[in-house]
Length: 276
Image (cartoon, rainbow, N blue to C red; front, side, top):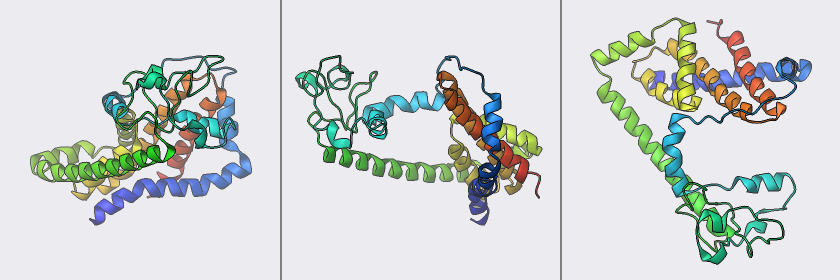
């Protein structure tokens, strides 16, 4: 238990300590802003979008359960609407619940909710249609309750999966397999950083990587000392997704933010990794 707790806090403490050092430094010198601005081209060309293997598996199922309407946050933040009430009640043309009748964009001269559909916090997907928690005529309270139910269900399934993961690791990683993994991860620190970055690039989440590594540390399969460079690599790997996303956009600011994320983690590694 002590090893597992120590392994779980490595990621958090690295981020907290790095922020404690670099945030005041950035306020005083602006070095991240200046460094990343110097690396920017005058314009950013369009690129192909990249979708990770995990998202390809999960997205079809999630899109059929619930899909958040991202336009709500965008419209409220830009002042287009004052609050969520402008999106209710939900209305589908002809009472047909599909993407074209409910969530497609209105043409010039068309009025939302009458000539074209109107959706609230929950919208329909262009590829998978309207999700299970979508309802024609729903009110703001209906969508809020549906979101709360999905949140509780997701936390429940997450807990079950984590318990199952620990149980499988306890049963499967015994004897010879434990020694194999122990030797495979007992590599030099730089190699461990690269390994952590590669795994995180595949799953697109440093939290997933550290969540898998934590029970392995608790079981003694991975040394606690190896958790540190693997976690540092996970922090590098999670920045690659942001870089790939920024390359799809024409916005130079998007690329600069992604580069700031990358060099924030690299700076943290330079500061903390040499320390014993």
